[in-house]
Amino acid sequence: MNEYKSLFSLEGKVAIITGGAGLLGKETAKGLCDFGAKTVVADISLDKAQAVVDGLQGVATAEFIDISDEKSVEDLISKYEKIDIWINNAYPRTADWGVKFENIPVQSWRQNVDMHLNGYFICCQKAAQKMREVQSGTIINIASIYGMLGPDFSIYQGTNLTMPAAYSAIKGGIINLTRYLATYLAADNIRVNCISPGGIFDNQQESFVTAYCNRTPMARMACPRDIAGPILFLSSNASSYITGQNLIADGGWTAW
Image 1: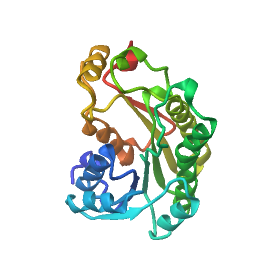
Image 2: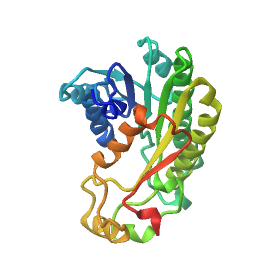
Image 3: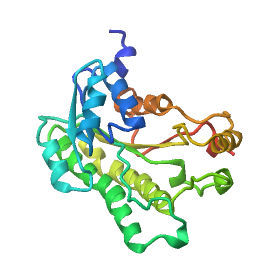
Image 4: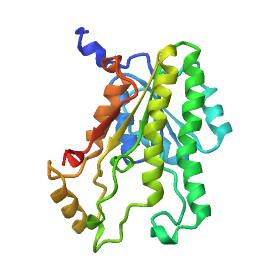
């Protein structure tokens, strides 16, 4: 294999992606398989994870995971002799997700932080313990541009969409958890990075899509592949000297 092409190869690697049955998860799983990784599509819905695996070309397995349940995470990790790549992509949330700030019940806020931010913490902790056994690994956390800056609420006007307050708080926490872990785990040869995507097109209302595109220098929303590519880069040896970084993939949203 060409010397530089091999930097991007994931042959022989075991990669686990949580939220693997979701929009971004299944696209990333496809890329992991294409690059040669043994891919574990982990999701709270095992049936949906299996449906993703059935459509992949490569070595892939569907697994159940509840990232907010420590034992569930431990049970999954115990099935594998090694884990080279762990991608935190799950997006757990309560049924009342998206209510206005002034109407958010404190219990709902706590539950969302517990499931999402604490879930990422649990996964990072358990994955790092496994990676320390071989003194090697990479952890990638999916954050958001809204973990870095406040929402532009004007793009939601006239739609049934909004940006929940808990989302910004959680994603900001994930970005800084990533930085902490990068310095803490560097001596164990474990890299920790995060990716902050902009909005990903998922058949949202036309008025929202138009407003979002008008607000973005590249004049479009992301597609899942736009985010899967950077994930694959951070999964590979091509990024071997990169840790503690927040890779922003937003079409230029944060550039102005």
